[in-house]
Length: 267
Image (cartoon, rainbow, N blue to C red; front, side):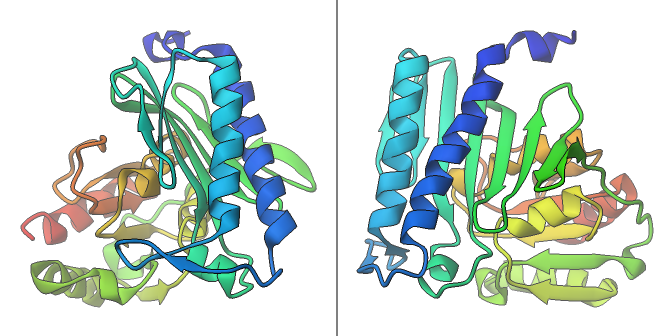
């Protein structure tokens, strides 16, 4: 067992999957049910489903690990100085959720002293889930069972497929840098939110590039991608933490990652 693994309470892995189950049950209950939609201060939408799904996860964490901290998109942060901090996004892709699009997910991260050591990407309507645990191979599960997820090789940026949620997230210098990367790659597709990271972890894309993300938007992905053999950093190539600036590079191939850092790092 590696030193990283010893930092992870084994019961946390089982709890993380129960959290995803609980949030997914709430999301499925309200999906395509004509929920009332509110606008938050940043003008992003939120629904009863978002809030109830996060509340369900918080209750399970409080019961299992009352000493742990929790940072969620909908209900804020509690016990922020705890060694172990859960970071929750109950419905990543709320705009898709409210328009009946099934490509939304639940993101769950567990940090130890600000370093992500566990991550879950759960797609409740598709019934697909990626689980990343530090020191172990990432797994993918669906109706056919559970198996290892593995990135694909792509050492040449000119052959790379880039996924990103929306071009609007790249403004100013970020937009100029992203355009240079997009022009150097083979294909760029938009949409997908957290599903993009799962696709990369399973070898169906080569880069996910994003900007203007909150910690609950990116921290769950890092253990998933690393455990699948990929790399995930900020635009300067530094590891992701709670204090990262919200610009991320996710790559299946280390050479592709280096090329992306080279083009984006000066922005």
